[in-house]
Length: 116
Image (cartoon, rainbow, N blue to C red):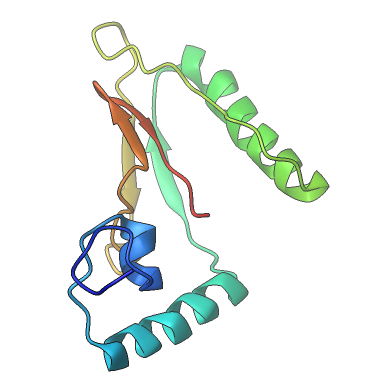
């Protein structure tokens, strides 16, 4: 596909689902950056505050995600966020972490994220 079109061959734009406006040399840099990101583990800490009743469900979701990674299985994992109820989690993390990824699907606020 040509530069300047959606779903271009630039890996950074592909992963962020933007219209690519990158030059050929920028695409080469992006390919190298993405390769490094895929090969590097990053350890980080997130501070989370939520109502007690939600903690077991949230932890179960995280544990299931880790389990799927260990066994090499792909599944959709969902946590229902009842914002008009009592699910009002607060998260804090280091702002030096990478920028948020854009969802690959956003249907009326139901979002799917995938690192590919």
